[in-house]
Image 1: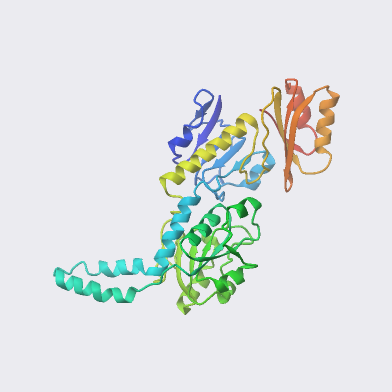
Image 2: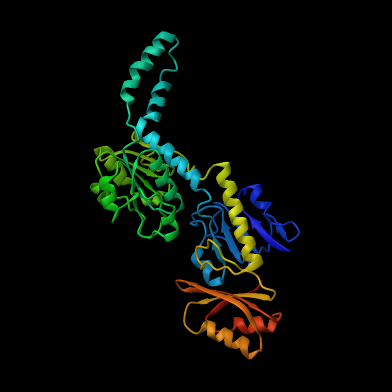
Length: 389
């Protein structure tokens, strides 16, 4: 019986993916094989030595100390794309809020709550609406920074609304590129995108090259009156630079679901809680994807959507399956295969992949592996994790 520890409220449809006759799912499990969580922070927790994998039901893994877990052979999964539609729709909401003065006009109407005369109320409503005239999205240019699962959906949505779209992503994958409309123009650099965009939306992770990317220099290159939407990570923007750009009119508006102290009462900044993935559908999609990834890894050794290990998958044969992780240096795989050959153990099938400093191998062998064999494989230099699946 494999054991799964959960944190946070994981959607039931995801938990039900674990077959009851093979899996025990419990928030209080003391020796879990894997962990399924959402936003719970693991940085200050000591994991049981039994843990083989962690799945985050969401895209970001800031709440997981990935670099600490990798040398222990713990595979960390996320669920990219599962909440993409939810975020896309929130971007659409933000585009409309940033172009039509909707929240400001709602605040104005709220000031009329004490008016009891219907005719006078109507007069004030009609008079007040003049100060909240906006602009339409059609024909405007949207700059999309980051063209992964979410960014691609946002770009395609904007095209369907009649907007022009410019995209910038120096790490654009072939898979992501296939998802993009051919009408999306490509910017050579961030400043080029900013100079041509009426609206800019951010869809990149908070990593060293992107933290603080929207700073004073970036805003100086931006088109006057640009509207900035940040539903990705709060660390991407320099708060002081945003305030300065809003005050000067360089930025026409700022919308984000990462409220900050300096912007929370700024008249040109519309802030709301981190709602990007807060839909029933997104939470269910993330839970299902996370559960399926853990099941495939624990049952078959396959890795899909890991943030720290290479993507590796192999169909099961009639043999016995082993997996091992090692430092990505020459001769380790050869040493393992020679060891198996010396023991007259026949290899039925094998796949080996690497990612940065990590290599991971799935190998099916003809004979049932003994504890002694697993110990021999574990003792090979640069191998740091061996498992019988």
